[in-house]
Amino acid sequence: MENYEIREAAARQTRGNIVMLFLVMLVWGFIMTALASGPMIYLVGEVANVNTFEAFIDYIAVFLLFLAAMIVIITLVSGIMEYGMIANQNRMFKRESATFSAGFSGFKRPGACISTFFMRELFLLLWLLIPIAGFVLVFIKYYSYSCAFYIVQEDHSEGPIDAITKSKSIMDGKKSQLFRLDVYYFFVWYLPGIFTLGIAWIWGVPRHMQARYNFYQMAKTEKQRQVGN
Image 1 (cartoon, rainbow, N blue to C red):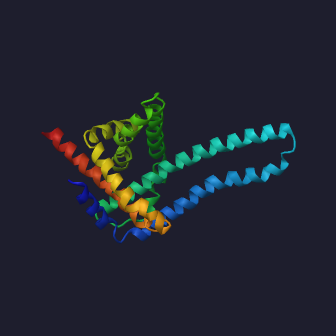
Image 2 (image 1 turned 180 degrees about the vertical axis):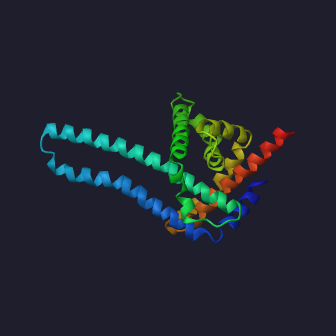
Image 3 (image 1 turned 30 degrees about the vertical axis):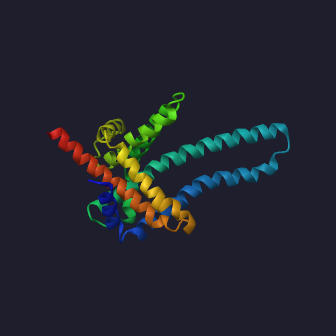
């Protein structure tokens, strides 16, 4: 399947679902903002009490503790959010309507969401730490691991490591095609969307994410055919 066919299918599948998808993302945005801003508001309020060097040291220690906790919490919640987004993409792929409950279905499988998100990001971080070649390798591995969450959402028996391994197999020989798909949406939707103050992204982001899910289904089917032959 060519990228233009994947894009056309994504446009059809998201049609009539944009409002629901936007509502889900709006609620997730409020959740993420609350998690990030709450500790920061507290820390800003505490600045007035920093009037000695000892108090300054204590403030820095508390700040770093809050920062670390905030990063961990947001990271964990991000996995749950991504799972919910994929659940709706799966529904639209099956020609079903996106729903509010599906957007938060990750809360039903928090362990799978958190472990998959954590392992994927950890592997990417480890690749990034390789001197000189790290940036190139992490770019390649980002596309190699891109199907892991789709696999976990679709098959509840899959663990994060197995999902990442299967994702690497599915994406073998497909990474450049997915990259070209991403580039298309960047130049056609994301970049021009700046001039609409982000309004165009309300349509562009769901189409892009749905196109990526369609790509996974296409790549998975082709891999199954190869194995069958």
